[in-house]
Figure 1: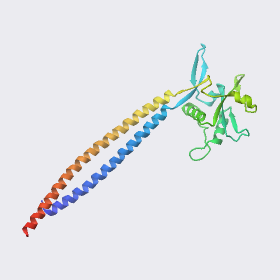
Figure 2 (figure 1 turned 45 degrees about the horizontal axis):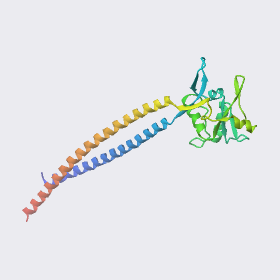
Figure 3 (figure 1 turned 90 degrees about the vertical axis):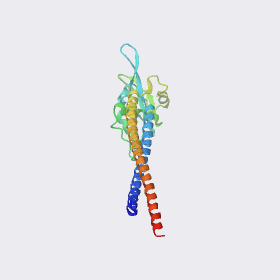
Figure 4 (figure 1 turned 180 degrees about the horizontal axis):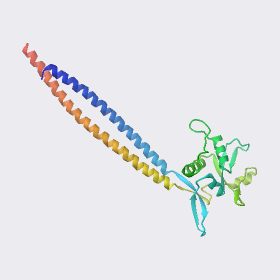
Length: 246
């Protein structure tokens, strides 16, 4: 192989080596991104493990007791409880929410969404979203629970005018035998299924990146070896040329 052709081949190999190094660096960055995604998926799963729901005690036809999910604010009121939202525009500084509409208004007065606007929960009425909302409100520290007094087919709740009665009516999930907080098994199973699917997807991608990196490494070593050979040939050609003219 002539000196000029050796140099041309060496330049081509050098360019190819740079391309391989770029691809390898890009794959390493993607693997790092997969690691970050894997950590996020795991953190989401841990959050799901902590998710709970509130249930109310009911009496069955046979007299036995059981607990059922509170899936709407009407369920909460009909069970004899109401949320008191503190820090509202009410003259007393709090609102005893005996309807969903009152709860919506009270929440909008003290909470903001991610854009800084009044939080709108009017669309969260029933189901898993409401169960999560109820739990989050109670855990926020801005909301307390009061027990109603049976009145006909419904309940009446203290409005805070009589502070002693209002204080007596306040309760909590931990102390009230009519309420309980339990792990949300349905949401947990959903989270487990999502976690397994996401981790499998991440693992497949990660394995592909490893395979691609191994192939690039093999090609890089082959190119490196050929470049060393070409450099040796080029050096020998130069030495022979100097000998001819010495």
